[in-house]
Amino acid sequence: MVKLNEVAAGAIIKFAGRDWVLLNPSEGYLMAKTSLITRNVYSNNDEIYFAPQRPGSLAYYLNNDYYNSLNSQERSVIKSRTWGISLISSAEGGYGQNTPTLNNSQMRSKELEKTVSAPIGILSISEWWKYSDLYLRSGGMNFKDNSFMWLITPYSVDTGLSGYYWAIGFYSSGEKARAYFSATQTARVTPTLTLDPNVTILNGAVTYNFIPTLTLNSPTDNVTLYETNTLNIEGYAADADNGNIVNARYQLNGGTIRALATGISTGSNTIPFNKQLTFRGGKLYDGDTAVTDELAEGVAHQLKVWSEDDQGGKSPEQLRNFYVVPNRPPALTIDPFATKSDLINADKVTISGTASDPDGNTVVVSYKLNKGMSTEVYRGKDGAWTFDLSLKDLIAGENTVAIEVVDSYNSKTSKTLKLNKNRVATPLLTSEVRYKIDPPSGTAKGVLLWVQRDVGLTVTADISMGLKNEQETYEAMTLTNTAPVSSGVVEDEFVFEASAEKDNIMLKLTLSRESADVNDAITLISGVLS
Image (cartoon, rainbow, N blue to C red; front, side, top):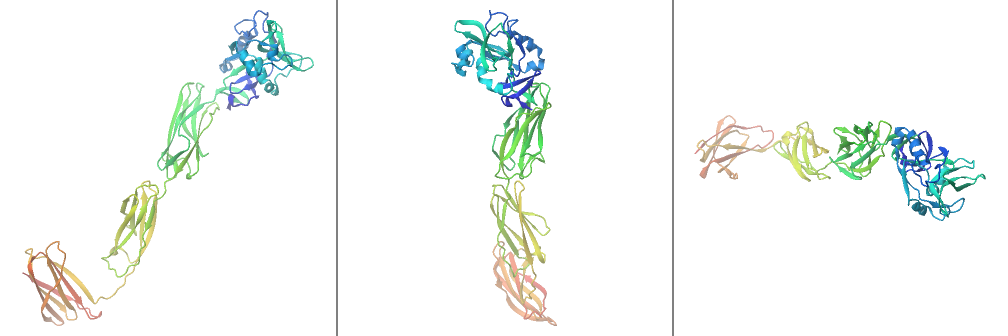
């Protein structure tokens, strides 16, 4: 189904039970392929112009008797047309087989010095010159019986007005010619008329169903969508036929056809639609439903929108190209991590790196140790991140540290770091132990210390006596005596006196053995504060 104005000139159109030659598609102008009747223009010569209001005339017959014989649907699509009916002389129109002295534009201008408007007419002489080749090629004027057909143009001879009309036909020899007949003579009547150029044609016939229309206000052509942008499909459909069910539809990249709106036409209303599709994760979504596959960046994607009615009519398709820039995943780097040794469980290892997002989004960096909980370590734009792992939290053997960066649209990048914790048991010959001393009175100036130990262990004592929040500073305590306590156990006596009362007192004992085979230990620590 197409509109009449989309059909090629010269096509045969079936209308009102007859074949018509389409002379001008944009105007919807047609001429009957064969003559309707044979008759005169007037019964006498006292009226020289085509006058639909004059009973008994050819013009009256066409616009009353013939026009009223058409049904209401047929009459509803016929549009009134204006013909030029001023007189054209023998020389001006090219009598017989002569060349006219006026070109078609000049002839048309002269005809329009006097006009008539009516639903049904016949060709003027200028229209014959304009459309004759097309009409004849389409099979019109297929009579060769020394007969002629009327034109609407009055014929003027040199002596003035005479009640004659131009006619087109064939001499008895079969030659085509232009002639003039008295209005009272008879000739073939081959009518012309103008149909609404928007009327629909199905299989070459007028269907009386107007093709629906569609106006697409949004989107404009060549828009670019970024993450979370919307493609707004907004406009309206309309149908000149009262009672038709009209559907507006859309299609993306030749995929599934989807509905925009449905309504019943009153012949004058519009059926609006407004669909918002969101671009996220590389696809377009209608709510939570993906309506496209993943869309590639850098190529044109196509939106197609149209309307259809329930009579088979379809509007021209409205096309819009659009482009997408999908959200790109954030970038994550981990700084080189060197092997570390001589660590104890109280030590920590530091892991660091950088995070960035090519689209300028906010990112969050987090890590997860083995099967533990995720811990956030950075939030912001492009920047450096760092976190510490305590050696005591690492299991013996392989440890997995999963590091992930997520942007504000939940696009992720992750990397995994493997840490191997290997226990190296090295016997110590010297070690330190520290104690904090809290004086019962809050402060102390002197300390007397007794340490009982196995004889295979050597102990020295250092003390830091200061005020709270001061840096610790250790000084050696004086060993004043060593005396036996029991078999294999001795007691060392240490003493120290500060210059003033102090409230932050720390004791440090250094234990030494001559070999790893010695397992001697401290058995008792006691003392007095003054």
